[in-house]
Amino acid sequence: MNDNARKQTVKAYFDGIAAKDMSRVRWAKDATLRTPLNPAGGETVLIRGREAILAFFNSILPAVRSLKFLHYYTGDGGWVAGQAEISLANGKMLYVLDAFRVENDEIIEQQNHYDPRPATG
Image (tube, rainbow, N blue to C red; front, side, top):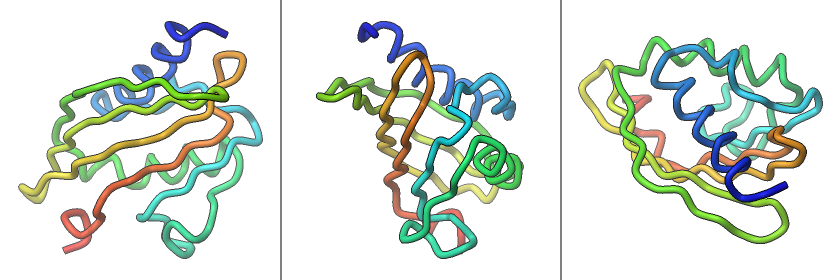
C-alpha cells in the first residue's frame, strides 16, 4: 500500500468528523481504537470492532462544531498520523494528533492523542 492511499484513509477519517458522518471511514471489521474519551475506561481500554467504533463516534459527534485539518505524517510499518484542531459546541478546542495503522485501505489500529478536558468540562 502506498503513502497516498494511507493519506486518503486518514483524510476520510477527519472529513467524517467534520461532516459528522463516520460511515465513510474504512475501519477493518476487527479494528481497535484507543481514545481518552472511551466511556468504558478511557485510553486504558480498547474499543474493539468497527461497529463499536462507529457507535462511539456517533455518540460524540454532536459535540463537534468544526474541524481544521493541519498536517499529515508518515511512519514505519503502516503507521501514519494526522493533526487537527476540533472546535467543540461548548466553545472549547481539542488539539489532536491521531495515529493509525493502515493496511489494505483499512484502519487496523487507531490511537487518539489529545487532552480530553475541553470536551469534559
